[in-house]
Image 1 (cartoon, rainbow, N blue to C red):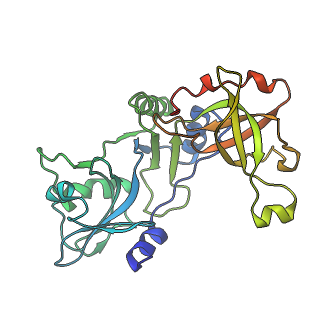
Image 2 (cartoon, rainbow, N blue to C red; image 1 turned 60 degrees about the horizontal axis):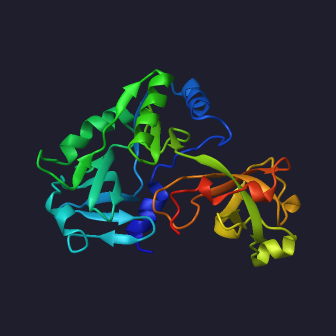
Length: 288
């Protein structure tokens, strides 16, 4: 991993998620008790990147995992880029469509903007990057500012209805990198599935139990088929007591076209339901 990728990994603002067992509204209410005025924007399902331009050279995109990208990698996108020198922007890259969504500003023409409030940084983005009316691959991520939790929930629901991952809720008064300043709201649902097989690593084998399992459901032929993995669980679940054949309620992120269950988290073991009641029809978007 290069220097710039390490820079992104170290400096990219992280978001909190709060307790997944709480409703979306409960999580919003909890966050806004300490952050009464927030910015809300769509949660895009892409790759987190910094858009960086030095004093003279052309801009590059840098991700924390996958390195650096330039015009040869995304020619359509880079044709739309007009970035000020000595500038760093925080973005989400949709690789398949070569679309870049800009949502924050870390440095503008050599001036560190991270101590500024989010509201001030948002105002500076149009000065840092020119996005023309005909641009098809670079966008300023839309956002609203509100002190109304109901409006935040409405915005989140609108994002989900559009097929997006969810929404990001951010304290407008805080500088970039402030702890607990961003809340991630993802579109999660829960389904009941059957434990098919534990997955062990060297460490978990030594511990005598695991926290990763293969999960299944019954198809219309009455066959128990694999639908994905769960690699974690909430605190109330004792992994030592989870066994093959148990029915578990699993929180996941429904995403059209995925082959397997996405982001599975075991919420509880269900003793009130038989394995044969766990059907693949709960997951209609999974590819066969």
